Length: 259
Image 1: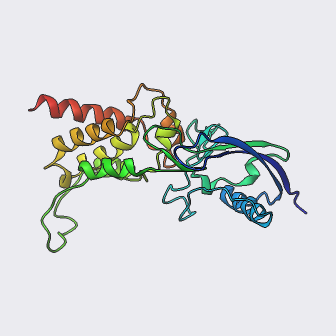
Image 2: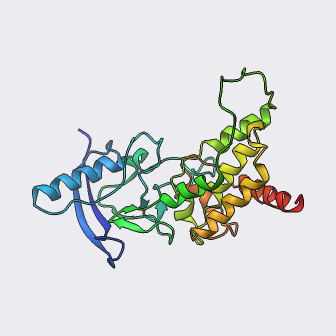
Image 3: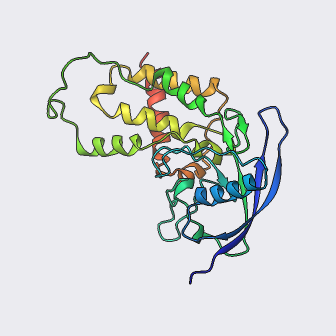
C-alpha cells in the first residue's frame, strides 16, 4: 500500500486587495501522492469547511494545463516549475499538472499568489490578470476582411517561420513570466504575441503599429522591462524561449527606424 503524505502548508491569506494579508499554516494530512496540487488544495478546503472555516480561494478552470488559470507560486516558483536536470530547461507544467509525488512526507510547502503591481490580489491566491487582456486588446490581433476561408495553400509560409510562429502561439497568457521576474516584466508574453503574428502573412499589415501598441500598453499597465534574468523561460508552462524577446526588440527597433 502506497504511503500517504503528511504535509505542512504555508498559504497566503488576504481578504481583498486592500487587506495587508499574511501567511497562515495548515496541515495537509493523508494526501494521496498521485493527487494533483489543486486536488490537494481541494481536500484541504473540504476539511476547512467541515470545521466551519473559510476555504482558501484560488483560481482554476480546465485543470488540463491548457488555460493557465491556476496561477500559484509554489515554494518560490511560478506553477511549481523547476529546472529539468537533463535538459536544463523548465519542466513546462501548470500548477494543476504538478502532482504530490514531487514532494516528500513531512515537507513544508509555501503557496503564494502572483506578485506584481499589475496583478492586484483579489482574495487569497487569486489575482486580477485582466491587464494581460488589455495588452492584447491594444493590438494583439489582425484585421482582415470577412468572407470565405482562403485555400490553405494560397499563402505559402516557410516551414521555419511556421514552426516559430506556432511555438510563440502556444503562449496561454498565464502570467508566470511576470511572477518569476524581479521586474515583473511581461516581455516574454508580449514577445510571443508580437512574434507569432509578425512571422505570418496575415500579421504584416499592422506589424509596425502592433509592436508599439503592445509595448506601450505593457508599460501603461505597470509591468517592468526585461533585464535578461531568463527566469521567465524556466517558469513558462509552455517553455517559450527568451529568443522571442530578442525578436520583439528587433521588431520594435525596425518599426521606429522605418517611420
